[in-house]
Image 1 (cartoon, protein in one colour):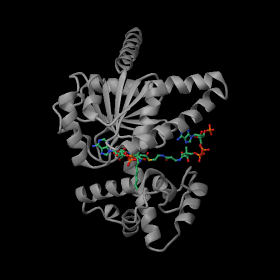
Image 2 (tube, rainbow, N blue to C red):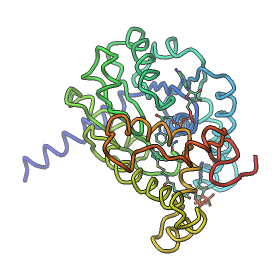
Image 3 (tube, rainbow, N blue to C red):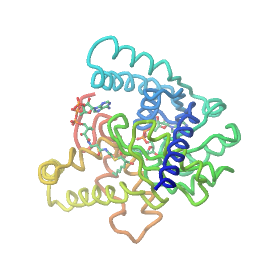
Image 4 (tube, rainbow, N blue to C red):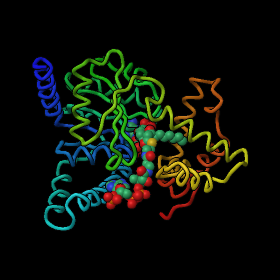
Length: 309
Ligand SMILES: CCCCCCCC(=O)CC(=O)SCCNC(=O)CCNC(=O)[C@H](O)C(C)(C)COP(=O)(O)OP(=O)(O)OC[C@H]1O[C@@H](n2cnc3c(N)ncnc32)[C@H](O)[C@@H]1OP(=O)(O)O
Ligand SMILES: NC(=O)C1=CN([C@@H]2O[C@H](COP(=O)(O)OP(=O)(O)OC[C@H]3O[C@@H](n4cnc5c(N)ncnc54)[C@H](O)[C@@H]3O)[C@@H](O)[C@H]2O)C=CC1
């Protein structure tokens, strides 16, 4: 018992030390996910640089963060000085940039949240590997691409892993921490401790397709799409049924619109390429049509449903 207590104390102390070790965080990609990750990191006392190749995306992200952080502050502190202080202090920890390479020079952790494309992610990490300090941990927020395939672009496999957040990041409590065989224990522990410092509940995942949540969620979403394609139900009725009959906060079509149909298509195209015999991953004419028309869901104003811009 004394031995166990000693071990627990030691591992708690180690976790705290590791969480403290990650102070400077660079988030690459300022879309739906990157903005949320950067926001929560700034809210929890980290010094954050949020990067995007597209300056327009950075501007939109700043606006989304300002709106979201106000909601968080109101929920935590109500109206008044404390809420104002929380918002201004959080925002003062957040910088933006369009230069990824320059932004990792003093990073302890880089979290990549750019478009769901293996080649683009590898090109990015290859450049960052030469620019970041030796101690910097690299992590990808990919929904569906094997972490090992992305990590191949670097010479720091022991300091590479997956940190898979959920949308909307300021609200969703889960963080999947993904290790590849080469991820060192120190790296894994530091990623987990950082996740907890971000206020998240962490689960340990192997580098298997879709980790835990998406392995179950993506087939569910695509079965809903097939159901509509077969003419068995309308998107609205499927959504109503899953909300009222299964207690889901959003139906699958609302959730796909929320996540982004372009991202959904990237995921399913990648899995179809890797698993051509799995029928549920074959291309969906309905999704193809919507994406080709620029209907990417809430973020573009229309997907399965229409949204006010
Ligand atoms: C095609 C294949 C694609 C596969 C894709 C895989 C993608 C991935 O890799 C993994 C993913 O992220 S999957 C998506 C996971 N997310 C979900 O399942 C969200 C489901 N929806 C919800 O939980 C609520 O509708 C939700 C929380 C969103 C909104 O809740 P409500 O409907 O009740 O709306 P509100 O009343 O506005 O909000 C409820 C509370 O949350 C606060 N809030 C909402 N959005 C916020 C935001 N962006 N920032 C800060 N706070 C926010 C809001 O203030 C409110 O708080 P209370 O006042 O305490 O209720
Ligand atoms: N949308 C969602 O619900 C979730 C998405 N993810 C994953 O997170 C990642 C990002 O997804 P979203 O934020 O939804 O995408 P998004 O489309 O909203 O944003 C992606 C951003 O990356 C930027 N970008 C593209 N290439 C870049 C590069 N080389 N350097 C810097 N910035 C670059 C784009 O300009 C864009 O602003 C993807 O890997 C996705 O699978 C993970 C969890 C949930």
